[in-house]
Image 1 (tube, rainbow, N blue to C red):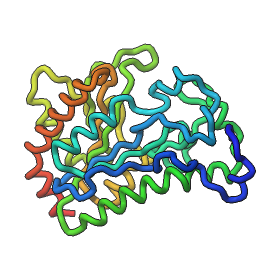
Image 2 (cartoon, rainbow, N blue to C red):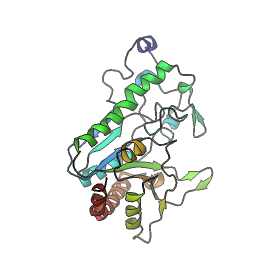
Image 3 (cartoon, rainbow, N blue to C red):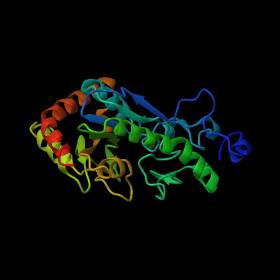
Image 4 (spheres, rainbow, N blue to C red):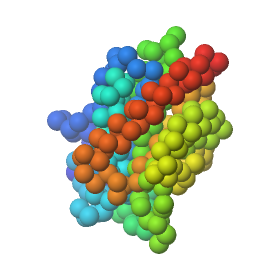
Length: 269
């Protein structure tokens, strides 16, 4: 572990120092919308006790540390829909809130071609500390928000962003809608968004939802049989705040158009 106070942590101390933000941010918890919005990779913040994990500022600002622009879209979408928003407040490099805990990508030693020195050869207690401080509180918060809305229609919208180039190949989709076993909501939104002839929408591109590398949708969406979709927006279309606002407006409009059908899906679960 990189940083000070390792002895205290090993003896049962807390990962987050006094004055640091909580592990999870909840906005508009009692919002009236059908939708609940989540953002797994909203922040590139590293707990003070971990220093910089041995990385420079450039790496910590890169996609390996978070989903640039995703939090801005999620926050604006929450406001437009009057929907609760649950966001992770720390970097995916510390522990990835959208990876199963047994995944090699949960606490990556190497990601995007970059070595993460502060994640090498972690003891079991160090992994457990990160899990208990950051991963579990985030998912408890999602569970609590959904539980408080029991007995009414609930739809899960997970907001992410993706790099415009991968392995040297440009990705043509400015937005992609991802799903796994349950395509119900993704199919509705895909049909609606494709009404815009100028918009290329990826269908399970650049990613689909896979139990091996995804956690939030399989657990909170599929696990509860709630209509859900993972929304991926290309990062070069999110470089300015007004771009995030436009994407949120476009998503809000599309969701409102399919909301009656989504509510009908909720009634079948």
